[in-house]
Image: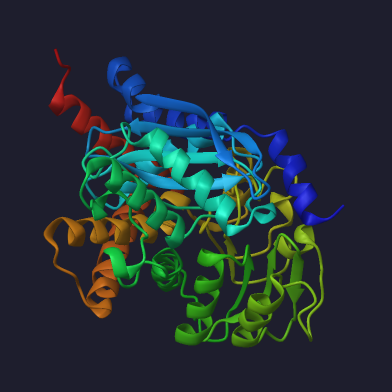
Length: 426
C-alpha cells in the first residue's frame, strides 16, 4: 500500500474534531473552567456549508461543497486558511478552526480561529477550473468574511494566486479594493515579504530554542521531514543552510527520499520542481512513510496532514524533538507514548504559528498601507516565536506538564479571559 492511500485510510478512521475537543478538555479541566466559559470556548460560533456550481473546462457544470467555520472571535476577527482536498470534511474544518483559535492566542496576536475548505481534487483540475471554483466559492463567502470579520489565507493545495482570486472577487462585490480580506497574497496586491517562508521559518526558530534547552548541538544533527510542501521544504532548507542540520529523509504523497549521509536539498528542490515528486531523487531510496517516521534522528518534522503519528506507530518514533509544522499530526494517544519516551513535542499551535503571525503582520501592513522590509518581518517573527516558546516552556516547567498541555493552558486561559471580560450581549 502506498503512503498516500495509507494516509487516506487512516484519516477515514480518525476524527480530528474529536481529537481537538479531547485536547481542549484536558486544558479546560486543568484550568477548572466554569461551564459557561468552557462551552463558549469549545464549540464553533458559526458554521457555513455551501453547495455551489462552477464551470469545468469542457463546459459542464459541477456542484462543489465548501465550508467556512468561525470557531471563536473573542480576541479578534477569525483567521485561518482555506484548503482544497478530496478528504475535506466539516469535522476537519471545525478542528482546524479551533486550532487556529489556540494558535493565535498562544503567540498573543489579536485574532480568533477560522478555517475553510472545498471538497475537490486540485491535482485533477487546471488553472481555469481552479479559478472558476475559487471565485464562485469566494462569492458565497462575501457576507461571511471581511478584514474585520474573518480573514482567509492559503492552506493545503491553495496558494498566493488562490488568495488573489478571493481578494479580487470580494473587492468587486464591495466596489473597491480590500487587500486586508485575505493574507498570503502576492506582494503586488498587498502581500507581505517573508510570508511564504513564515511557517517553516517560525518552526525553525522554536526548534533552535528547544535544542538549547536539550543541550542539542544542531550543527551536524540529523532531521527527518514528513511532507515536503511549503512548510516542510522551507524548514528543511533553513535547518540545513542556517544551522548545519543534515536532512536524511523527506517525503510527499509520491513516496520518500532517504540518504543516511544527508540529502542535497537544492538539488532535491529542483528535482521536485521538475517532476512534481521527491520519489526517485538520484542517490536516494524510497523507504515508505512508516519507516521514515521510525528513522533514528535528532529532529522529526511532521509537515503533512493530520494524524501522522498515532498509537499505532508512536512507539517506533526515535527522535529527541518532534516539531509539528503540520496541524494535528499527533493524536492524543500518541502524545502520551512520546512523552513517556522522553521526546519533546513542539505542539502545532506553537511550532507552526509563524504563518499566522506573519499573516497578522501582513494584515497590519494592509490596514496602514505601510509595508515592511523582509529583515524586519523576519526579526519581528523571531521575537514572537522565541518569546512564545519561552512562555510555554516556563509554564511546562512550573506546572510539570508536557509542552502541548502547557501551550493549551496558555492559549485557553487567554481566550477564557477575553470571554469573561466581554460578557454576553444582550
